[in-house]
Image (cartoon, rainbow, N blue to C red; front, side, top):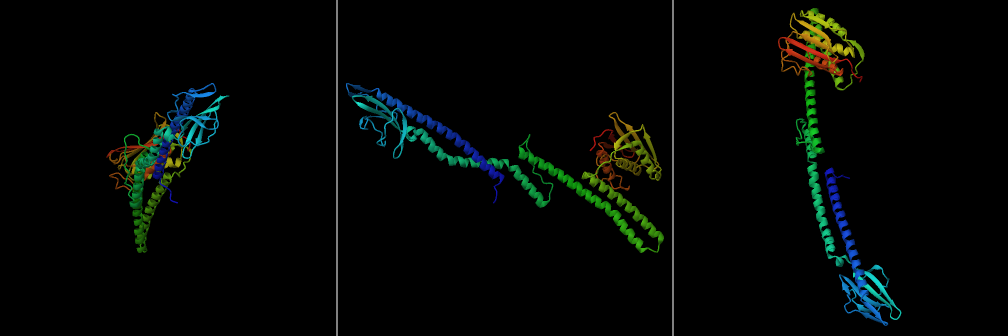
Length: 458
């Protein structure tokens, strides 16, 4: 069975509530008016009947009725009967049923053939005359008691379908307007699904804070911004990774084919194998960094917690890059103000420092200098500065050097994959720290790692 849409259900609920409120309000008014009207009719009946009794006299065994006796007043009729039901005087109400028994001092409602009546009997008893009944009667039909209320009831019954239609229309337009942003969300989502165009947006903007659905539309647009940004970054990342892997793969294939074609020339084969080995190391390093970043993105890297001597980390890093620095005649200096240790993952901290030192040597000038300084700032954080006097980084690139596979202008002649700084940034942030860079083209760069001494365990 097909269910109604939320908009349709809301429309009918709105109409139901509106009609219910109107019906209850009118019903209360009609019930109150009917009761007051009927109470007024009964009161008039008793007053008229009691007044008629005052005009009846019994003198010397004879019944005397004043000539000015009122037999009718505001719909109430008065008739004087003998005890056997024989009428003596008065005005009988048309269609009033016959043989209605007398009951003293009690207002009753009796049914006629087509309508009902109110009856009120008073007894006058005398030994000589016997029992005399004074009966008041009045119509109990609301159309005769109060024609205005009767008209109101008819008008309400006529207006009820009109109010129902108006309530349905009001509910329809109210729900349509309320759900308009939701419709745009659905249409935008369908267009994105059909055309795979993540640039589409709902584009609903309101001054101030909108309703819940408008706020949902705004959040949907923000989500699409984030999805598009991440998708483009992922696409760029995939393209860059493919490009980085394509080059060493092509070199390996070319050198393998060359070596197989020159098996008799030992020197050529050895040279080809060395090139293949170098490219294999490059691919291994690339895959290792990609795997680390992928695990970091998924939150699957668990940090080890050990007491790490940062001064020792700098010394070990400098020693491991000594041969690399000597190839460019670069001097590496390590300045440790005092022994500074903190709880961290030593392997990851070493990797971050190694990445910065490797870049400093790679982009440093021939016969230059690289310095590594360990200190403590006023806030009690450990500070590691790695500085070089190399080519520097252009100002327009300084904010993008943390992006994966990004290479600053002027770095094209140097080997690298553009993943080292992205990985270093993640390592530092995973330890609750910050990393920054200042640089000037032609004068060198300084990278600063700030690590807090105290950090809550994950």
